Image (cartoon, rainbow over all chains, first blue to last red; front, side, top):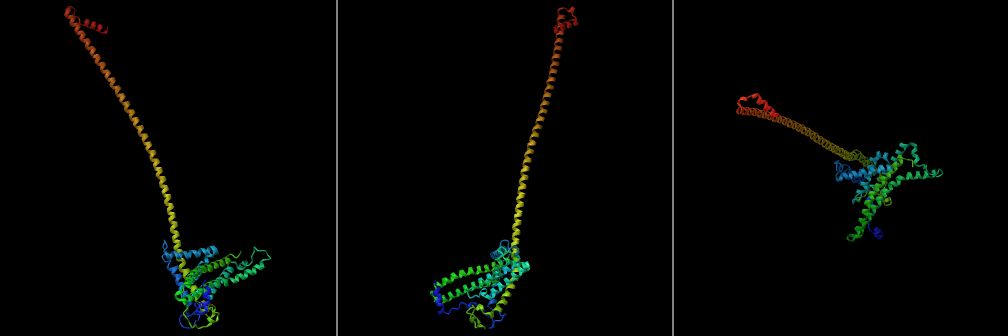
Amino acid sequence: MAETAAEKSVSGLNIKPMEQFEVVPLFGDALRWYSISNVTLWMALTLAAITLLLVVGARGRALIPTRGQSMAELTYGFTRKMVEDVAGKDGVQYFPYILTLFTFILFANLLALIPMSFSVTAQFAVTAVLALAVFISVTAIGFIKHGAGFLGLFWVASAPLALRPVLAVIELISYFVRPVSHSIRLAGNLMAGHAVLKVFAGFAGALGLGAVLPIFAITAIYGLELLVAVIQAYVFTILTCVYLRDALHPSH
Amino acid sequence: MAEHTDAANGAAESSAGMPQLDFSTFPNQIFWLVVALVALYFIVNRVAIPQIRGAIEDRDQVVSSDLESAAELRAQAAAAEDAYNKALAEARAEAQRIAAETRAEIQTELDAASAKANAEIAARTAESEKRIDEIRESASQSVEQVAADVGAAIVAAIMPDAADEAAVKAAVDAQMKG
């Protein structure tokens, strides 16, 4: 509804929706590979939040769980069940890695919704490393567990023989596209949502006190972004489990 | 939002308005990401998972042991009820047995007592009859004596000559028998 108006005014207003994604050093001017940057800060906060939930919250080990412990156990049980259901019983041995991945993305996404925060998971460098780590680990697991038999993943035995080479090429391409889609899906969703929020925020700032419509829009999009934050973390994790299942059971 | 910076690299602007594609920031991001992931993996794997799993296992154990002890208690209750019923049946049987025994005992005692009483009565009756007989005997003897004496006295009074005691006595005897 207000979008066209917003777009028109963007050019006139000084809104920089992408500025929030800039990586800047917190101390000094030069950004070296070891510099403490806003990336460092928000990753540290992400780790602190996870520690607060999974370690401090669950410290009591009470028979009747406290609120914090219930949430920690819920996170634990939810992720474990997802790994077990999707990747199978033998996928459970990779559960610690999956839980690490899930909590990291979930909390990075959620913390990024704090105003003035920095969104770690909207950075392609971060999501690409995560996706590549998953891709390489899963491929390695496949070859270690099944040797050359892992290539059976690309050879669709149930298809007619004539079609199989064609399908093999398609499967191979889709396999190598996985890390790309895996990483861009997460970063793209986060980036788009935060950029839109920023645009509306700039619009609201320009309108001043009469900015009822942009504020309403920001509220609505914020709710949507909250959903996106959780869903994208879930999607990233469940896709990891799916890839893991392919590696553990390559036959279709 | 990042505070405004005259960033060391103006590449952010050059990359079509997408700071994410500024490759000069990649080493920094990747380095810190790897550090964060390794640290997080250790936190999750060494501390969080054992702690949470321990809590869940403890709870499961308590619940299952509670259920077990409940089943045990139920079995105990059932056994106790069985024992109670059995004891009740036994007591009832015992009571009936004792009642029957007592009744039989009383019956025999009663029989013995009545037999003894009958015997006593019979003995007393016999004795009494004997005494009555004796009394009757002695009485008839006395009557005979008195009759003989009276006869002799009458004979002596009427005819003192013919006083023959033996004859009188014989006559009296004959009379008495007749």
